[in-house]
Length: 265
View (cartoon, rainbow, N blue to C red):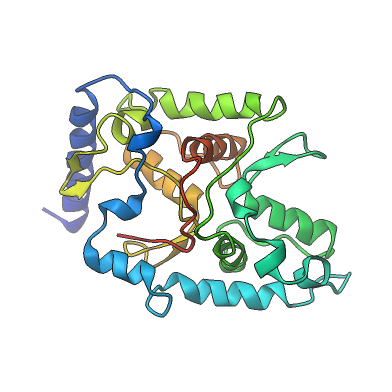
């Protein structure tokens, strides 16, 4: 069998394992006392890598983000620090509150989208590419300022329709395997899939360094991986569906501590 054939067989086997796992019970929302970070499912060695800033690869992006924070850009020749000052003070807790409603757009935006709104509107500079190195670095730097603080997204009357849309996506069966996100991450989080632990999908550390990727990635990148793996429609980066889903996931992880930049297998 060719290498492609082996790869295809492995993907099909994984899909079958997911399908069999998900058939066992209906999805139910996790009670607060049972919420666990992906950190709790990792090996001792991977935890140690996250805990030590000198060993955590994500800190390389944080350093780049700090440089971007202090670099003047665009026609306005402004740096982020010119408006916001010391990020250690002005940005403390900010990442824990996103996605958040943007008044002008009348819908929630992610932290990455907020960075680009400021970049195009205030600095008069081109937007950073979604999932590009610069946007990942700056969002990692901002996320780092909230590390150790609890997630506290706000769902008010303006955000509720988008929150409900995200909840619907999470619990909706979809794709060729007719699976929902919840069937794995709420009903079977204490089991293993293809030898790997099934986590609860709590977004406490994004953007994070994933050993599988050998690089930093956003929550949307991880969601795209999950959707592709279960043979479901994969949304574009920055799509309203992903923003709504992220809003729901952050609410679902409310009270849990930000770990950015986290490390995962």
